[in-house]
Image (cartoon, rainbow, N blue to C red):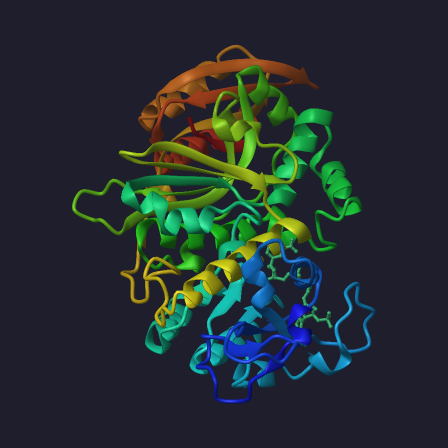
Length: 465
Ligand SMILES: NC(=O)c1ccc[n+]([C@@H]2O[C@H](COP(=O)([O-])OP(=O)(O)OC[C@H]3O[C@@H](n4cnc5c(N)ncnc54)[C@H](OP(=O)(O)O)[C@@H]3O)[C@@H](O)[C@H]2O)c1
């Protein structure tokens, strides 16, 4: 590291977060004095290693002022891809976040605890924090940003959502000049890879998941990805940024992609749609209720012409609609070592540039609001949507009429009702509804399920345009 060649002037030169004045290795005084920022890194796994690699060959001159002073890990014996002087590697992470000589803490350990406590402790010791930890920010963002506001330090989180896509800063800053109406995202690369495989190769969910695992895109226990929990963490953060509210993470309705079959993918394509796991945050349109939001994660049929329909593989994308902005799409690599590390170091650069101007307080546009109103989330039953329904029924005259009648009784108007293939005397009937209240659609389906000719309703998915 460049910082290793520099000699510190001695303790007490700087306030935390402002850097220390140092002299070059020639030992000159006065002229040539530079500022070094001592970084404490918590975690040297996938992303931490990527960060160290970028800092070892700094792509921007400001980053030459960084000294990696301490790196916290769980095991000192693990082989590491990057060389860290042994005296800087430690398992005492508490010491890093309370060390008065550390100016900036970068948290890349993941998990809820001890990550949350260490972030809070770093803030308490007056240190700005950079984190990629969506799980912590989605659940404890309010607590962390309240503490940061009190301590007057910055917390930056670009890498927490969308990997290398600069969506956090965009939502915090430039896009705030518009009244944002909706943020839709493909913000989980694993599920997008699985759905792309299913669409392109005709694979089943299990086959596509095995492919994702073989390529290192999915973990042995893929639940957080395929059940939509990871995307829910991220949309909670994006919704908070976009709408200036606190979004109760546990209240976000969340459905995963396990139930999508190759048959559904094929039928959807025949109608000009593709399946995506969408994370949605939009104004609920409740008159007089500014904080009423419609936030949800679920598999969605999108028209092939939608900008998000052409995001394939592990890529991510976020579509933002605002007034007078119009529509903006940010797309790119949503995870992985390089892109995520790039976002982390981008935050570090932003922070250093800010500190170098002599500013002592964080930029007010950074982070989440410190004490935001809590959003009230629209219950799924009240959501208005179009639906795709696949019904298995006996191949007899009058079945389609009976199904249509049930829908009609609940005010669900239909765009189309089509009989598809027949298997062992059971016909597949696919229904596309117009925009209806979800509760009405579900009530109609409960009735349809009871029809003697109906053997089952394997699929119910929402359609967005
Ligand atoms: N990987 C990605 O593509 C990606 C993308 C976006 C965001 N993120 C986020 O970035 C963060 C880091 O992810 P990652 O993939 O780099 O994780 P990782 O590979 O599992 O690395 C975690 C690192 O933290 C250390 N660590 C974990 N718990 C610890 C504890 N209790 N005490 C001390 N050290 C501990 C580990 O130490 P040892 O090395 O000694 O085990 C390891 O170095 C997570 O919040 C993740 O959600 C990751």
